[in-house]
Length: 69
Image 1 (cartoon, rainbow, N blue to C red):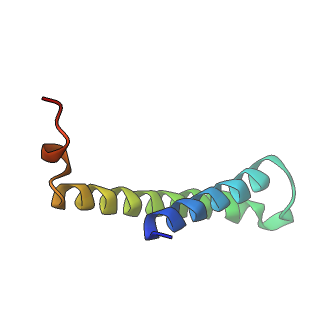
Image 2: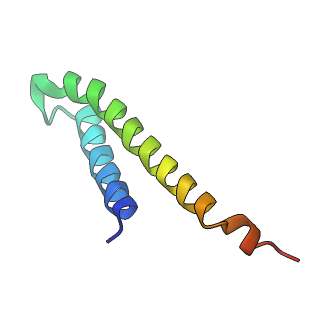
């Protein structure tokens, strides 16, 4: 699998853990730390995936090769 696919799957898993911590008492007293740290971690992963994809498509001249004429 590609690196961005793996990071997106990790993002999905972290989102599920965040939802469990936010809506249930699954993690007990540690839930507040999960609720604070998890969105920050997800934002960092999402920013990295966005930056990687943006650089990849700009290097390949993706927009110029796939223009509708």
